[in-house]
Image (cartoon, rainbow over all chains, first blue to last red; front, side):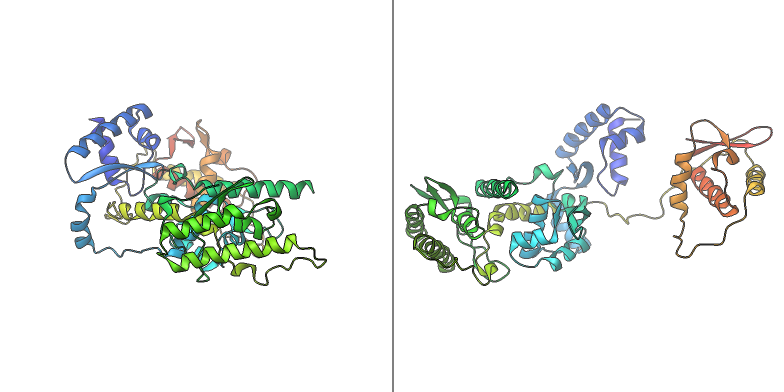
Length: 183
Length: 250
């Protein structure tokens, strides 16, 4: 049985990103062999056919090429859920500052964000990741695999770098915190 | 002492949840502070920068340069910058003048334009672009297809009677089920499967040796049901000897 075909068959039936390790285990092959097969498959599909292999949310998945998006959208009539400005703001704050409490999100935005956080949790873009060991043990929020998947990211390191001003701000805050601690 | 506007950020008037416009990304370069006007405003507001040490001349210069360069394309943005500037001037004036009274805190500190969200603007735009790109790709739906195909499992020479005998032997050794405690959590077969799978080793052993003693009839039944499910899923192997049935992790 051809390794590349086997890998494609597994990716075809998978409804979520699959890691190379998982593919290797299922096919009783080495991870390196599977990685190689994935590369071959990727280039093979890139040159022909409507499908492509993408690296997403920490794994590999088969999907259609963007060229066919319109035809598929007409056929499936997907209900697109656009994220509002406030939801995007909260999502960005959580993505960069996670794990983060609701109070910290409120502080960063200057407005209450509980409704937005609830909305994002319902859309499975953020989730509770623990509790902060401070009085009241507030819930800490972080992004989900679904977030990576929906935003075309393989992992959080793929997030765009924040502006230099933001880093300045963080440095100033850290310095101020240090001074406070010393006092 | 120069001022510049980041091309990437130009024209980004960020409206906060309060309907206020964040100051535009005016870059300030002064001997004791380098960063955006928004950052300076926030630092001063939160008492993280000593405004007395920051000359306001470069700040004003940067503001005027911004006004000239932007050609007043966005009045809201220009007004937000002016508001930030006047706030800084007022605070500095208060700090410079001899006054015994403590400096008044703004009654509603949150009414000041919130600059932080503005700093995320490029990231938000990038995320939105990626979201749009991603929406052009279609993936297999999680609920696609009928019931999944199940791998056939083999019991080799093990008969159903052998399994029934194994259960009977275990039940004979079980202690009576104690009176149920109030609020006792419900047990699930899935959870029990995890326990059984963890308890079984790679060496074959009979069921009564695998279950931690003492156990109740209920425990025994749960163990047995979990074992059957694990056998069906191919995660437990089963072997029959002359006298008993033995199980091992696959």
